[in-house]
Image 1 (tube, rainbow over the protein chains, first blue to last red):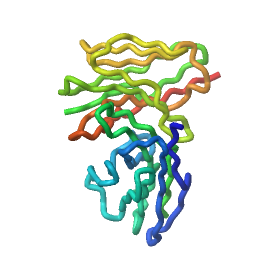
Image 2 (cartoon, each protein chain N blue to C red):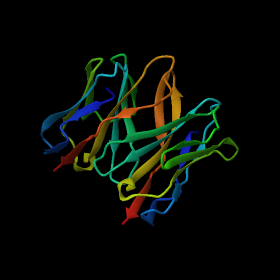
Image 3 (cartoon, each protein chain N blue to C red):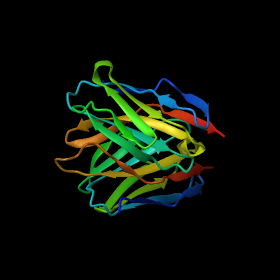
Image 4 (cartoon, one colour):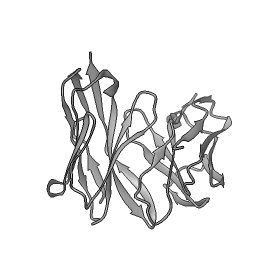
Length: 115
Length: 116
């Protein structure tokens, strides 16, 4: 089982809405990531959780709020977003042990449109 | 600074042609990993290969092959006898260790279009 599952696949929201993106993995990985990918651009790191604790925050605006309830789940809470936040949001996981080679396993992404 | 350069923004070939995607990297680390990912229109980033900095052996997997040359800091990817299903954006990536946490530095990607 090498799957990272993201829901929803598509999300349209207004600037005043509150919504959440969800990510789940069952590979026993203890590092989970959120990336943002704008059209025709490479993915950009947003957050990294390691052993359910936030270890990297790439100066992301507070309207994006990550949460890691347990080792298999990662959420991204969205509130008061701007149209320029429209993008593909990718979740990934990786091993978090001495054999960590930096290899990330990605989900299919959640395509977000902010109206 | 860590950096990955994919100079080819878009490539278009006709089915059955061979095509090479270029990747040049910069790093100060002595131990590092290089990756290729494929991103079809569906959006998922599909892992293709990982190569560590101590292994310069070229690798072949079916129609795919990779040429890693430390002397020129390059990690090029060749698709032999391309097929329409190979159409996708391909990203080359370099691992970085931030503390003990791995992360990926991506190149800007090369969009490959294979026409029938």
